[in-house]
Length: 178
Image (cartoon, rainbow, N blue to C red; front, side, top):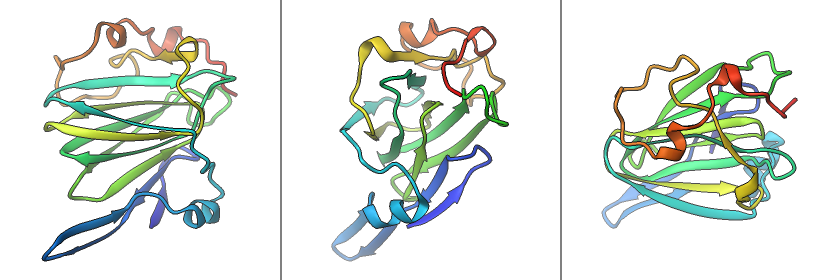
């Protein structure tokens, strides 16, 4: 596994170990020692996945303390454009974002620490896998409106949930993250 820190401190693009032969392919999505070497929170309490149609946008999601969590995400199928937004108010990159294309073919994953809003756009039909360091807690779920922080999404009219469309704009969000 190769870890490359993004322009947002603590967020890593990970090139996963993969192998292909005539039988198919093998990809390692997590290795405890590799995460320990990076000094990353690697004890995950929950794992889930979403299946998504082409042109779906999910995000920008996070959980607030005390149920905030780190995430490891990757595309198990299809192609997605993943977007990370720093909502840690004391961070020098508060309000900044990065985007990374992930696909089954490019074997990439993303690790993000607590205080990062996460969303993605489906370039194709896809399956997204998430591992989180805390369990889902409905009362702690929050989000930032997908059009409010300056990112140019590939589609101005994506398929998006009513909930995600109703999140506050970044400028109106009072962050609990330091």
